[in-house]
Amino acid sequence: MYDYLIVGAGFAGSVLAERLANGLGKKVLICDTRPHIGGNAYDHYNDDGILIHKYGPHIFHTNSQDVFDYLNKKIGPSEQTAYVEKGADEADKTYADTSKLRRAIGFAPDTSMQDGLEKFVDWFKHYK
Ligand SMILES: Cc1cc2nc3c(=O)[nH]c(=O)nc-3n(C[C@H](O)[C@H](O)[C@H](O)COP(=O)(O)OP(=O)(O)OC[C@H]3O[C@@H](n4cnc5c(N)ncnc54)[C@H](O)[C@@H]3O)c2cc1C
Image 1: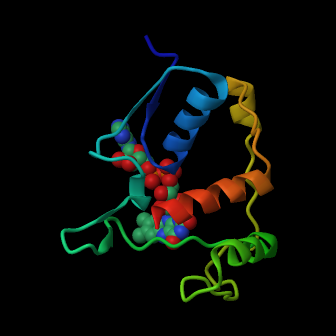
Image 2 (image 1 turned 90 degrees about the horizontal axis):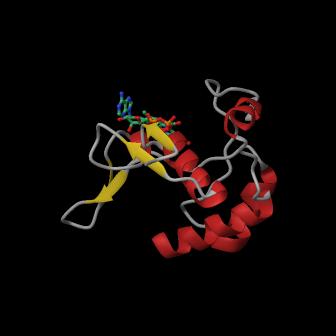
């Protein structure tokens, strides 16, 4: 018996499933019509060792100078990291609000930005 059924294993569903399972100890079933997790951001290596972005190219970008500086320091500046001005078609501001999620399932982030970045760097170095 599961506590939660999550339909869609993209970023949103995968992160929610992970947080419910590891953060709150819930038993979660996650399903997707696609045969993989990651949704539109899914990528995989083909037989020639080339990384394929199946649903279109994805890059990590941030509008936080702190995040940019931290990652450059930890991962090292390279051709993969560059500072570019915001594109004309990008939103000036976003207003992510998790209060409804908190009300619905009692979820509250327990990872600070600093810890989260460090975990991300560890993951990235391993994944590379
Ligand atoms: C071409 C392209 C390029 C992009 N580039 C970037 C980038 O460079 N950087 C960046 O940060 N973001 C980028 N994005 C945006 C990023 O892909 C999305 O913000 C992110 O994937 C959204 O995650 P999500 O979980 O909300 O949705 P999705 O990734 O769309 O995942 C939803 C999942 O739900 C599944 N699903 C839907 N309905 C059902 C159903 N009824 N039953 C079962 N499963 C279902 C789908 O199959 C899918 O796997 C790009 C998007 C595209 C399309």
